[in-house]
Image 1 (tube, rainbow over the protein chains, first blue to last red):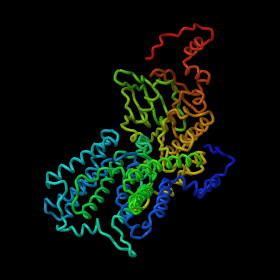
Image 2 (cartoon, rainbow over the protein chains, first blue to last red):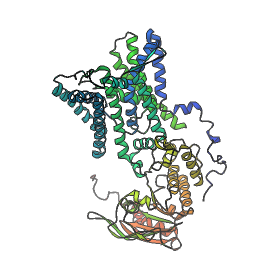
Image 3 (cartoon, chains in turn cyan, blue):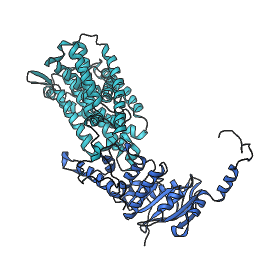
Image 4 (cartoon, each protein chain N blue to C red):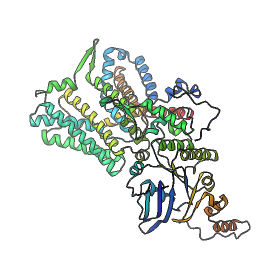
Length: 355
Length: 269
C-alpha cells in the first residue's frame, strides 16, 4: 500500500477535527461560497433603499404586509428552487396554483360536498399534474422547458374552458356558505396576531416549507440525489441514484406547493378568476435564481429562494409605500434577476478558484 | 486459482459490424491485466461487456468460475465489478464526501428523522482516501476543484471501499500529465495490493508496462497478442502496440524530402 503522496505533511488526527492547511480559508471566504450570499446582499440593499425612500416601510404593519407578499411567492419558490437544483424548470407552476383552486372550488360546488372533500380531490389532481409533468419529462427526454411550456398552455386553456363550461362565467361561484369553509379558511387563509402584528398563516406555511426543504436538501439521501441529478445525471445514474424517481418527486413537490397556494387563493378570495396565475411561474423562478440556484442545476438552496422571495415582497410593497408608479416593479424584477445572477456567477467562480 | 473474471473467445456484433472477435482475457486477484489498443480497437466494447452495459454474442464470460451474462451495471456492481469511466462518475459541484457516498449513503435515525450520517460520511471519506495515500485538505470542497488525477483516485477509492473485487479502469491516464499519471498509477497499484483484480484499459504501453502483470493487445476488434510480463519486454510491447511495420511505413512517409503532393483528394468527407 502506498502512503507516500506527501511525506512532509503530517496526516490530520483521525476524527477530522481540522487540518493545518485550512487556516487560510477565512470565514469571509466560506460565506462567499454559500449560495445565499447574493440574495442576502440584495435583500439588505433593497431593505435599506425602501427604509430611506418610503417612510411607512418600517412600520410593523407594513412589515407584515411585506412578509405576506413574500410568502405568497415564497411558498412556490421553495419547491421551484429544489426543482432547479435538480436541473429542471416548471413553467406550469403559476397556472397550476389556479387550477388547484378551481378544482377545489368547482368540485365542492357542483357535488355540494363538504369543502374539505374538494380540497382533498384538488390535492390528488394537482399531484397527478405534477406526476404527469415528471413522467412526460423522463419518458420523452425532451427539455423540461418544452414539456412544461406545453402543460402551461394546456392548463391555461383547461382552466378557462372548464370554468366557462361549468359555471358559465370566467370565475367560480362563491362557496363561502358551504360546509367546512370556515375550518378550511382557518388552515389556509387565516391570520394570527403576535405582539399586535398581524401575521398571515401563509407566512407560517412558507417558513415550514423552507425548513422542510432545507432539511431534505442537506440531510437526507433524497437531497443528495437532487444535487447529483442536477449536477451530472449520467454520473448519478452510474452509481445507482434513481434519477427518474427523483425528477418525478421534484415535480410532485411543486404540485404540492401549488395546492397549498391554490387553497390559500380560494379561501381568502372565495371566487377564483380562471385566467389568473399566468406569469407567476417566472416570479418563482426569478426568486430561486436570485437566491443562488444555478440555472443549469446542481447548486442552490431553499433559504436563498426564501430570501429571493422576500426581496420581491419588499419591492412590490415598497414601491407602493414610496408612492412610485407600480409599473416600475416589473423593470425591477428583470434588473434584479440579471444583477443577482451575475453576482452569483462571479462569487461562485471566485470561491471555487481559491478555496 | 480461479480467475476473478475470465473471457474466453468472446465476440460482440453490432448488427453486421464485428466489434470484437474471439478475445480472451483473465483477471486474477492482486494482479493487473492491461488491455492495450489504438482508437477503435474494441477496448470500449470490451469494457462494456465486463461492466454489464452490453452482452456478448459468442464465447464465455465467467465471474469466479460461474458463467455470467450481465444485464445492467448494477448487476455487475453486485457481482463485485466496479467500473471507473474516463469521463468519471462524479458530480463536480458536490463536495468530495457527498460524491464518495453518492447512491449508497449511510443513514441514521428512524422514521421522519432518518437522516444522512454526515459525521460517518466525512470521516470515512477522509480515512479511506488517506488509506489510498490521498491526503485531502478539505472533504467539503467541490470535487470539481480537484485535479483530474485526484478525481480518478477518489473514484478508485470509492470502488475499493464499496467492496469491489474487480476494478475496471477506462483510460485513467489518458487526459493527464506525466506527474498526475504517475500518481494515478500508484493508486492503481495500491488497489492491486489491497487484493483487487484490476483491468487497466490504456493506449500507453509505458504506463501499462509499469504496473501490468498481463497484457492483452487489441487491434481492429481482434486479439493481436496476449502476454505475461515475464514473456515480453517493453520495447516489444511498444512495437506491437504501435503496429510494428506500420510505424516503419509511417516513419518512411514522414521522412523529409519525400513527394510533396498530398495522397488522395482534398475533399472533406
